[in-house]
Length: 401
Image 1: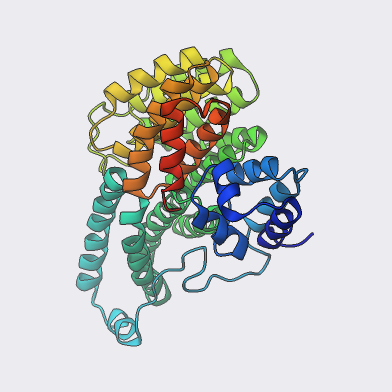
Image 2 (image 1 turned 135 degrees about the vertical axis):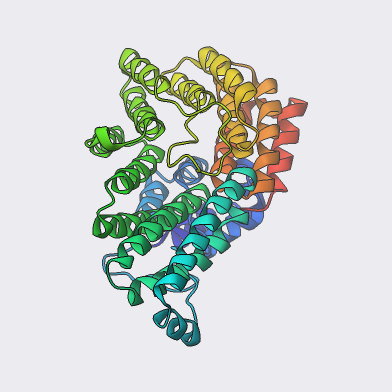
């Protein structure tokens, strides 16, 4: 079995299908297809499945995409690689860090801590495109500190590094770079374990569970959620609520409707304040507001095959999401569009998907874009509708993010 790009090229040639025609049928930007074919980009699982369907590949493209999404054993991370290595600091900076006094080191850690909160809010408002570069730049400094600082100050540096690494994992996940997401989750776990930071270990397990959920692996999602809340007594309520909603998704994937919604109800009792400012100032999981949980309930209803109930729950969520969570609105709109499509309302599905597309374009959220592409694929049979045609045309003009 060859590489994804090579097999994509072979199938396109065998089917007599050019870049523009394939992009029209997916639908997506022709430049994105060219980048996949040349190996410049890796496909999301959803795109791989759609390409497999259009090219009648019999599962070959899906298998190749899954294989290429994981780094090879022993594979390192290089600057500019898909895993997004931290921006290295120059030699003069390393020498200066080595010479820092305890007071200077304390000031630097406090500064980077404040910057982390600002970057979390930037991500919520504007998406990964606007936050990822700064996160990697700060990780470069933290990486140099980890190499230089000894206990007891080292524990503070490691705790800070674990938080930044988990943020990098999330930003790569939202950018549809699952290899990068997996790498940075591992780094976060490594640093958190060395620091003895139990809640951060739980949160890294939560992040790994989110990645498993994106692949529809219910067993792994359930296992990781259970591991994440193993020490639940030491976790703040909103963090535990976020872990519980993840467990609810595992129940939904298994078709266990009662257990799914019972678990979401338990999460609601632990939810964060409805007006959370979106900067994680109240700790990890502070995004897990009642509105966020209703958005997840809508997603679960959709997974369980109840699109009408999903539409209602997602509508409630959109009305109640705190202003700082603009991108979550994009996710909610994408899921609502999928629910309208499943409920047999293609015109409404396309209208809502256009709202999601506007947010995806502005934020650089590849995750939202892939969700919209999946909706557009379902709506292919309704291309004669003006709203559906407009959505497909807009997608064709949208650069890959």
